[in-house]
Length: 243
Image 1 (spheres, one colour):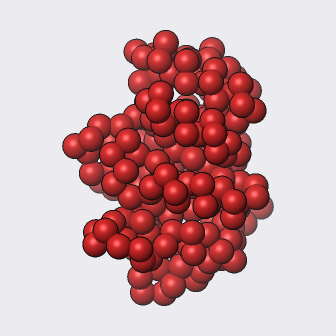
Image 2 (tube, one colour):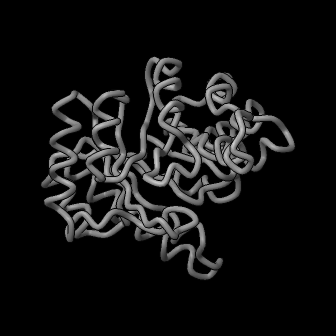
C-alpha cells in the first residue's frame, strides 16, 4: 500500500500572498496527519516563494518521522537541510520563473553537482531521493549515484489528453520496473489528483505518492483533514481492486 505524502506548500502560498502570518503551514501538519498522511512534504525553494526557513525548522519539530524536504542542489539550501536533518531530502530542479516544478532533475547531465549534494546529505544520515522523469537513462544514473529512492515525475501522465494517457502510464511502469530491478525504492508525484491517482498507486512496487495542489484545493471547501482522508481513501480503494 503506497504511503501518502501530503505537500503543504500551498498553505504557505496563501500566507505569502499577503506577506502575513496566516495561515500557518505548521498548523496544517496535525490536520494532514489526522486525515491519514504518513509523510509531510515541504519544498524550501531558493526564492522562498512559499515555505520559509522558519517553517522548515518548526515543522521539523512537529513531524517526528516522515518529513520529506524537497530542495534544489544549491549549496545554501543543502546546508539548511543538513542542519534540520529531515527524514528524507528529495532533490528537485528549480527555475526561478517557473510556476511549479516543470520536469525531473537531469541527473545524467548534472551528475557532479547532484553527487555533491547527495554526499553532503548522506553524511548527515539523511535518506536521499531524486525527483526524475520516467526515463531509462535517468533511472540508471540515479542508481549509480547510490540514492535510496527516486520519485518519478508524473506530470506528463497527469497532463496527457485521454488518448495519450496509457502511453504515459506505460512509461511510468517501465521506469518503475527498472527502479525495482535496481534496488531503488519507488515514489511518484506531481499533478496527481482524486481522479487520476489510482493507476499510479497500482504500479507494482509503488511505496509513496506525494500530492499537494489537489488536496489543498479540495481543502478550501472541505477542510484539510477531510481532503487528506478522501485522497487516502482513493488510494486504498485503488489497491483493493487489485485483490
